[in-house]
Image (tube, rainbow over all chains, first blue to last red; front, side, top):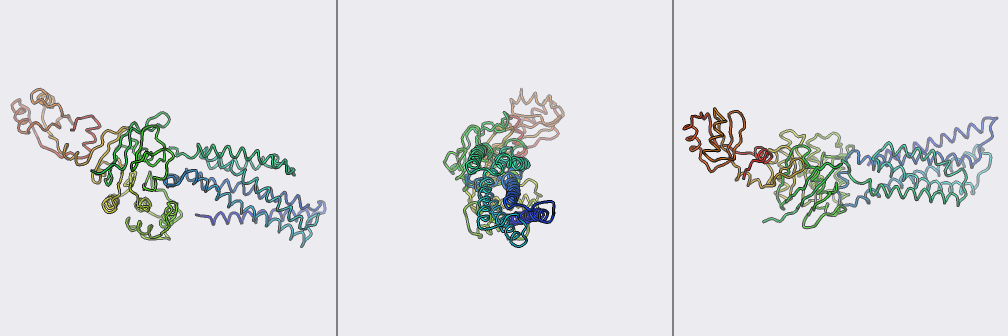
Length: 219
Length: 307
């Protein structure tokens, strides 16, 4: 149902992210007062843009596909099916997470390929690229994928509890702003795992609360 | 005698300490058309939502098809088709596509089922016209088609004729009667329009401010309250005195400054006439009248003994 518009939105987002990276690369490569960008810093910029974009996109999807059904009363139909309500909502959450996750993977792969091609063809980075930089990019992608999957559940749960589409998006923006200071620029694996675990616990708590209290039909 | 497919015993629902359904008792026989009638805000939709577990009941018991329904139950919903509040659809999809999605949610996988449902409600098998372009009447019929896809035992229709023109109302009644007679579906229909229920229901349940006033077979209404005697007199005061003291009639009601209705049929019209003329009361008109559902509702609402 209307998945085409979300696919188009993802593609447009990825193109915009690549354009932003192009401007940054072009600026630092052509301005004599600046030094060229390092691969790591460009990767960090790309990951921030990609995670931020898709965190907000997931919030929009939750607002439209889950919370919107309460607003437009389609939930009266959904809940009259012989299907457990928790299963219905969980299926939608999984579907949205998978869709956003795939979009994010595509975005990361596009960004990594783009950086490598740009460096090989135009020498726009201060360092050279090789197979280890590809792995470095893929590792960043895996890390951000975990962060997105966990973080995106918090706006969904808050939005469902409050039955507010706008609150879902606002919470995702707040998380996006807080994400960088909380997660740190280059955390160690242990530090990253610890922080992710803490957020996973918080996300699990709010999701459980939303599943217990947020599924009823309010008059 | 048909068994009850649905029973509600003393069900209660409160919203913010306001009791919207207060100890409702409902008994729906298999194969009948059961009408719930009452003014807006009486609790009709809430009762239907409680039956469907869309809202949980605070207390009481709902038994469907011999089994007690608990707040977390959902399997029984495969045997119930419903239209609650308004016909909600994915407006950007066609009617057929909406029904196909519904069919898939029900675990069915045969487009012919959808086509059959569309034919029953006389809608075209159109994949191109979006629901947003449908008229109210078409949406209502589409909602009925959606409700009958799984060929349910029980059909719950919340004000299915509201917003329809007279022809639309007629069509809807014909569709529901057809589903009841041809497919043996039990139908629960709610309306605030008494004449609507009168024309279709086998059993009527009157509800007001969350309380069930009476649950009665339509046939019983016809038999027990088929008529009343209406008098037009020139002195209501004197006439009521005579009715009470001389004719010993207590079951009557003063309708206006010259009209009295008598609901007691133990007395003959000629007897009333005789007493009134003997006491110099001018009788302008005296006749037996048919009692319709609307009259009956107002009688039970005001507590007049109709039985």
